[in-house]
Image (cartoon, rainbow, N blue to C red; front, side, top):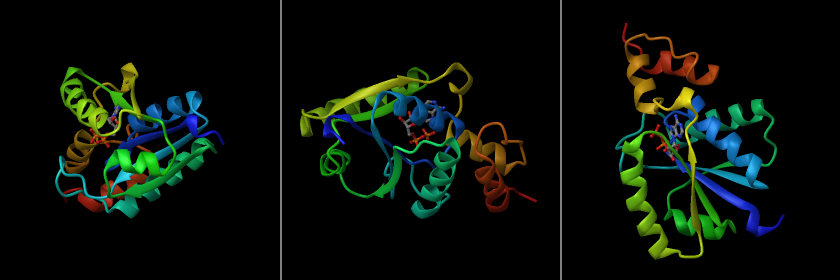
Length: 167
Ligand code: ADP
């Protein structure tokens, strides 16, 4: 596999949503090899609801269900650009929803570019049906017994109900 065709899709995926899967699927149509990189302990989002292994298991299951054979999932706890370099990736792919994502991504882009000018960040625009879908929103809905079955894979919906739904 040519190293010029590996992309990393990083995120906390706490938990994976159909919006994430849309970005991963579309990335897989452009790159020969995609590594979904699950941040072990995200700084920005604080403590996660699901452990890194649980978040990876949700992704593994969903990706297998989609039949995406050239997509793999790994957890990581190092600098993203180091992880990308170690895996021979030349691109970091991020999904962009509303304007609110842009400011943060713009800042991260400058930092990553300074650390690793050889790795390009690529942005995929959210599909309209997922533009307002976030892991945080899904967790909030699930807490109050809202139906999240259209927003996340079945396995995730089941586990959310078990883990956080208030009686
Ligand atoms: P979240 O912001 O939902 O907690 P992550 O930190 O796991 O998500 O994000 C991983 C990547 O997926 C980021 O690039 C984020 O912008 C993108 N992303 C998250 N949800 C969506 C969505 N509904 N549509 C498109 N991209 C998304």
